[in-house]
Image (spheres, rainbow, N blue to C red):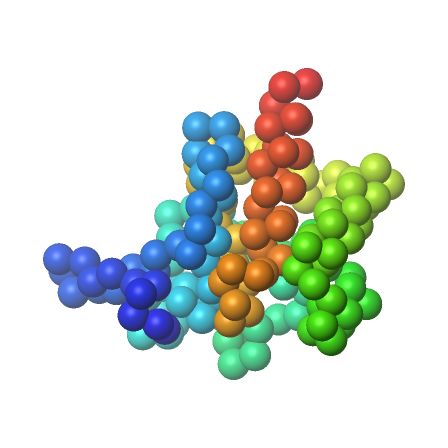
Length: 161
C-alpha cells in the first residue's frame, strides 16, 4: 500500500483513503486501489471502507484472494470490454478511451444488460457510499473514474424518474 493512500487510526489500525470521490445523492462514490483495501484481514491491516464495495475490474486482481476482498458486487458488464482495455494499454488516448467506454456503458444500459447491477447500485447509493475498487496503478487515467462519473449520472437520473 502506498503511504499517501492510508491513514493510521488512534487505535493503530490502518484505513485506506480514496484516490477520488464523486457526490451522488446524499452520499459519494469513492475510488480505491484494490491493493489498498483488501478486507478486514488482508494487506497491511487496512480496514475495508464503510461502503457498498464494487470490484470495477473485469479480471480478478492478481495476488489477492477472494476471501481477502469479498466485494458486494462484481459485475463485469460495468467494466470496459476486453478489446477496449487492450487498445488502451496499446496506446489509445485516455480521452478516446473514456468516450468509447461511456458508449459501451450506454449501449449495455440501453440493452438491459446492466439492469440488475443498476438496481443494486441505485439502492446502495440511497443508503450510503459506494466504493469502486480497481487494480490499476495509474489513479488519474483509470476506467474507474469514467465509471464513477457515468454512475453518478445514471443513478441521479434513476432517482429523478
